[in-house]
Amino acid sequence: MKTTKALSTIKEWSEEDRPREKLLLEGPPALSNTELLAILINTGTAQRTAIDIAQELLSQCGNNLVELGKQDLRQLQQVKGIGSKKAITVLAALELGKRRQKANSLEHPRLDTSVKVFEVLQPYFMDKKWEEFYVLYMNHANKLIYIHLLHSGGVASVQIDVRLIFKKAFEFPAVTRMIVAHNHPSGDLKPSEADKNVTRRIRDLSALFEIKLADHLIIHENTYYSFHDEGLL
Image (tube, rainbow, N blue to C red):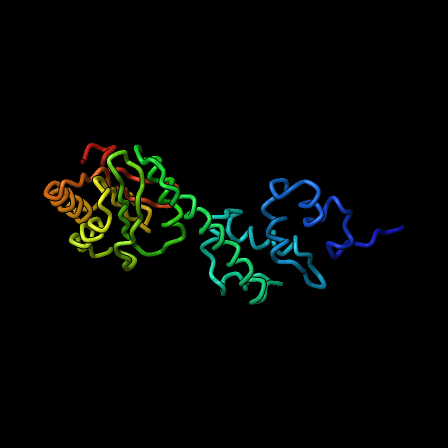
């Protein structure tokens, strides 16, 4: 019985099935996550194509790009066919994606709902396994002026020096409103007593300096808790 030789490299595929050629013919949006990742991986091994390697890499992350973004160099190299150079290329591409999202958030949008605030802040907390605390400074029309990383701490919590929030605010004369936000790496969005206390302290000092505290968000991946929306501000 006649058998067909297995195709072992991308170069042996028909042109429309090759990721690079497909990108040239149809544009980047036409490619699957596997195909885009295969372009970054570039070459396969004697036994596996770059597509095979990309599929395994995505599979170990549950085919979830957010989870892929949490992988470090060592974890990426656990997939057979990914050495340090390929792992570095993948990490660099993922980091560029995150920075692009952050750049979009600096276009001074109007932050008049918690959803808009979350959309701006989500890239800042992406893949973080420790708590960070940010302050968003705005003008009277809720237009974003500046995003400030106030503190970064351990897995459990951060220690906030509230005075530093207002020290930074005074650098921007147009600031009349602000929003604070931090993440809960555990995934539990329920505010702790410490969260409530620091919110009250900021709110009380805000009144003294005539800078309104508009909201406090607690964020985890694709979800958030808003003090304002829950009637706590």
